[in-house]
Length: 84
Image 1 (cartoon, one colour):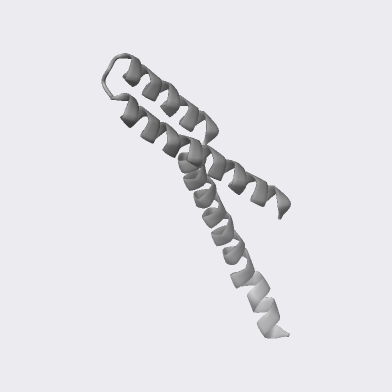
Image 2 (spheres, rainbow, N blue to C red):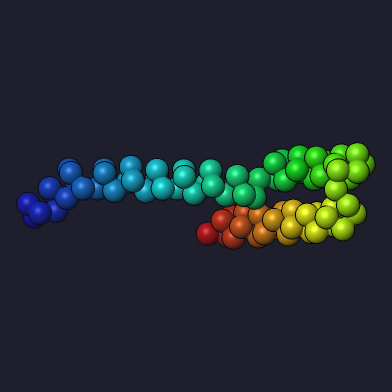
């Protein structure tokens, strides 16, 4: 009984705070990698680079494919989170 009370007083709140911090860091990392607005901005920048002939069409297609894949992965991650 005493062990349970001590756990509830000292450990449980700390564990909850740590869990919240880890979840917040995870969400920030996922947004950095899979954020739809961020990826769309990168696509626009990529298009501008192609138009200004700073990159070749092959480079554009390769980079575009990577960004589209990240968009799809982000959608999958968001869908998996909403199911839980």
